[in-house]
Image 1: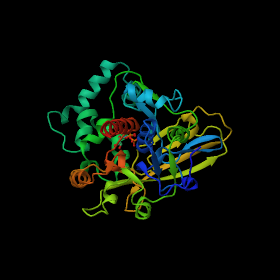
Image 2: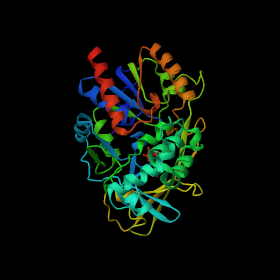
Image 3: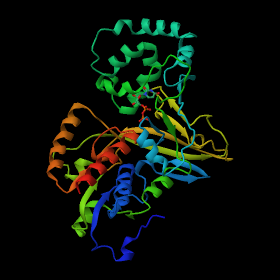
Image 4: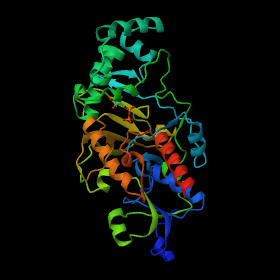
Length: 381
Ligand code: UDP
């Protein structure tokens, strides 16, 4: 059980080796490893729960991913072994489907999708079709997401499965988005609907919160605690700080505000046992305001009598809102690098995680980054 009341032990004046700001994945890995090597860690978080955005909570016996679907996948053997100490991962394989004008398409783009789009059955036919589709866009360096998509998959896939979804997701025209975002979508000439190409994949049985709780078992945790208020009152509580909040907020936004894309979740319980037959259904039409509907029970093969679904609406982000996706365009990247220079001058503070490093991190990359950071840190101390 997480100790939420470390005051009980007369703690405040007590010195910690690390004050870890943020009880999400980065903070939990750092805290776990540091605690294991004998360091005293205090983890604080401004939310009322641990886990950051991987937080799950049970509703109707179903683990609900409160901050969007999180599917763990990695090819990093060490990260996989590390995570398996704290949870048993189930056999969930992400195979989202897409709906466009009432037609169903499999994702990622694979032989099933090509059959649904063009009626082609063999990889040879599919390759030929893609060649025809991309021909007009070859031999050009893509300058934006639209050009990148057209030269990877051509017009049909772009219009039906990418354009509307991406423009909703990022709130911008595809011609105003950087090409790299779309490089995350693989193209496959087998009938394989596995969205990820990684060696390992799954969801922690019993939810992410229980997993994080195990990771934090040996250290002290204080929730509903704002870092800035806390350090004002307790400036010398720890020798070092591991800060996983937004780097620009740490510096009082003095160089400007880094931009994020926001998300709004509408979650409801429905009196049916199976609403959509799949955990993730993407809606790729621009006119439909949400990007996807998640049916949480399918992440864990649940057979409860009711179901819980979440509509995910991307939205404009403003300071003070929950930040989700960093918008890694040139302006923000430059600004982040300036903040990084300030960060390097803060000798006692380590910045990490999606917000601290302003990176569109998958979970395994966050764990990898935390393991590397803590290892480097412990080898010096
Ligand atoms: N994407 C798309 N159509 C889809 C799903 C994703 O065009 O049906 C694009 C979109 O640009 C999105 C990117 O792929 O921003 C990454 O999406 P993914 O679902 O892999 O990432 P997540 O939002 O889950 O981190």
